[in-house]
Length: 376
Image 1: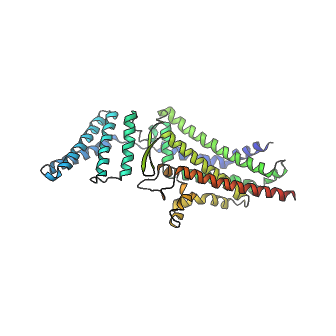
Image 2: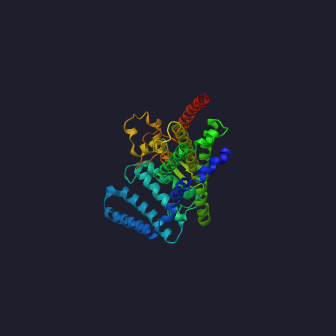
Image 3: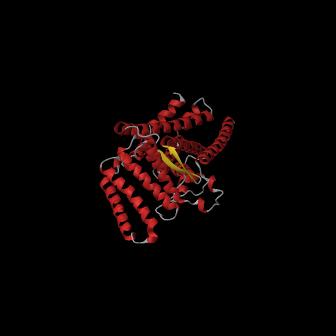
């Protein structure tokens, strides 16, 4: 039996593969299973309430000479609110979107001059930029119910869910540690000793088969979930805008560009987990210790331990800060800012790749030394 065939059979005959990737399939499917039932009546009620509050304010301030500008702003805001209400009632989503854009533009102007404080200037700019892009490109707002989204917009929503990528990486870390220590724990390492291959060739085949199995399985999950949604709701809008922060500037990227950055980042993390897992397995076959080493940077991200102990200059060089991939791509937010403004997609991928390369070189040296020792 060829070594490659042996590795594939070992992976796909083990129940752990089924368990881990069933959990990942569930992770991708939960929003579709649960769904969010949109209630247009509640949305209309809130808009109508805001409109009535505006009308009352206009009446109360009508005799106040000092409030002339404020009254004009409220009247303009109510014009857009009325436009949204009337168009939503008759199902004219295009005109409702135009009025929403105008309303949010007015809110942005009010935040800039200090007369309105619903959110920060950056967050409001994001809202306006997205709405402007939608109106200019004649793209409707995506559905709020995941079960009604197009396939690509659903996948984007999944990857944007807080901690989704961290949970995915946690499951993959357990999967990798399990299989990289399996031979030593089950004594099947004797099969390799009888095979006419070098240690480097054996480890290379093992890690390659494991990495390809992860790519195939996750790819199949995305195709299954995306395929079901594509059949039900269509492919979706690949150009749907996503507002991110690039330094202090708000930038619009497409859904495809956002997903591409996620894939590159995940590939960097996968390479890191595979090589670190292999490196640790050269010293110990203890599954718990291997899992702990792989999970450590992911867990440190959740508890923010290192960031409180290091200077701002060192924070961009802590891999634990790059575990929350979507947060890095978005550039943080008012509610969950980045530990450092220097945390970027390019820096994260470069750091993970550099560490992986260093570990790879160290692994080769150790394997060669083992080969020399075995010959003696």
